[in-house]
Image 1 (spheres, one colour):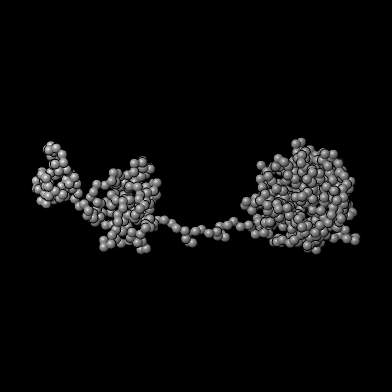
Image 2 (image 1 turned 30 degrees about the vertical axis):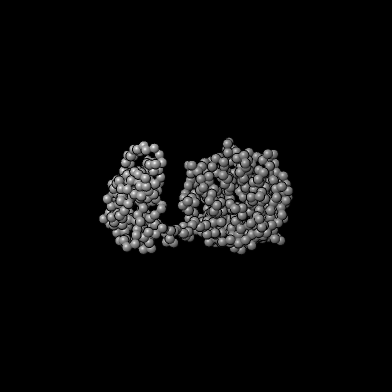
Length: 560
């Protein structure tokens, strides 16, 4: 920029002014002089070509209009937005992107919202929110530009400064607060579907939460006896047998005037008795035994004038009785026990002149009775219980002149009776119930008392493994001609009966675990010579009998 023109002076190459040697700046134009250039005498006098003027540095571009100025209120900045600004993300939007929710819209759906509220649903045409940014809180302002703001500045950073227009906010929400209200801040969610306003959202409250109510919780039926439909005909000394379909067949008996041929069916679902076909022969003190095919065998009994050897079959499918083979001996007050092989063992009884020791087997396949081994002691009004091992226990009864304590076992494999241990107390008309553990409970009955007889409260257990009887707890009341029914829980219900002076309405429960009897609810009607049948649902049907003065048609249900 400078050159030396003569000794002791320096010429400014910019304006040509002379300056004293050693000066650093031109006194005229202020340009820097080349102080490092040697004077002319220090080198050959070769003229130094003047350097070309350097190109002028380009001026910076003019700023865009409004550069450095804050944007107009509610408008985006004027400078060009970043690439992709205001555009949807590059990845494919999920199904339903930008569509209204599928659930029914709340009231006012699609209508403008109040000032300071979220944009109205659905979003404006072309609504395409940008990915959410977490570094600031977006603020929607201005009722007239809500739609424009939703399109252009969703997710953009808008900084609110003091002195600006104050936007009303819901109570409890501070403008610019780090924690945004869900109703004011659109967030990028996988579905990108606008969410429903807070009002439709149900919150748990004591009134909205269902609580268990006693009326909604099934409760067990009250324990005890309750009335049910009555028989069409009052009767005692009848039979009541559970059928395979859950109904109960009540057949024969005595009504106080005549022996009966009529029969009735009890339906537990309706609680009613209805008439069915009648027996070919009227009878009482007979037996009724369920066969494997669902039919019932009715055998023997008394017809009002003589004892019977005849037998009949009841078919539940047709509701009719039909004759079958007759027994070899006429008999009443006998027992009939279904064996595991389907045959029926008929034992003892009374033939109108004497007690019987004989026994017969009925074969359902042939409809014929055939003789089998005889008991060692003739007896009537005894018990017969099928044991768990298939043998049959015969116990007690009347032996022609006195009550019996002896017992015998019948073995179907050999067709013979053998003596087993005797009971501790002689008994006629007791009850015998096979317990869940294989023992047999013998309870109550009549027993000799001097030259007469009385009724006992005692009970005994027979153990088939050792063949002996042993005492157990006694009943609260001495009773005979009562009933005993095994409940589904293993206990035994003892109901009714008489003590020679009166009939009973009371009932007791025997618990095999404790070996004790305890009182339970009483029947509505005192009765003896009635029936008690275990139903399929676990209840006990008690029907008919004698109350000490008249024959009964009433029936009751016991709920364990």
